[in-house]
Length: 195
Image 1 (cartoon, rainbow, N blue to C red):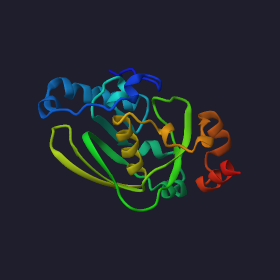
Image 2: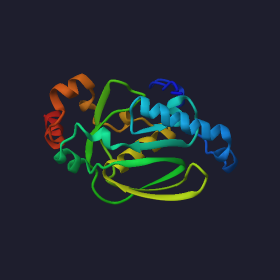
Image 3: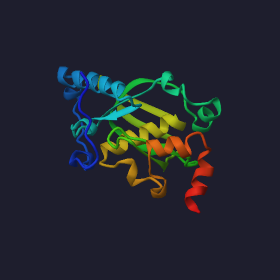
Image 4: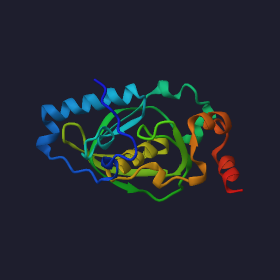
């Protein structure tokens, strides 16, 4: 059953979510919530969903970047974004570490800001220490688009949304993005916004 996704302006999106205990993680209620979040993310569709986006102030997010989401991207766009499929997984109580290197900029959207997109700089490579859906420790090292997804979802757990980090002049409706910016190299788009 898909859950309702809350929109920006709801106070839950601006709170630091609380950590989950080991007992909570393995409880039937939490396992059911994880499955509902997965269904909600797929129905949206999206590549990530954090618990605050469904009104739950919990340090929990689900992530999956399915290959069928890449159909509209050219091989050049896939390479520019360093994007590849990411299997479904859960991150709980994550600690994000930004690793040294470049900060690529790309358009991001958010299920809690429907119909909008903007250019957001993000660290290219990250390390995340977290628990999985069974409460087992895991360390994820990611780069490219996967690193972007992790940063976006962990931001939600800290009360931050992408508009807090975006290049403000790049904010666009999806309709205008598709008409004017889609398919263009991001560097040339940024140049347009800086004129």
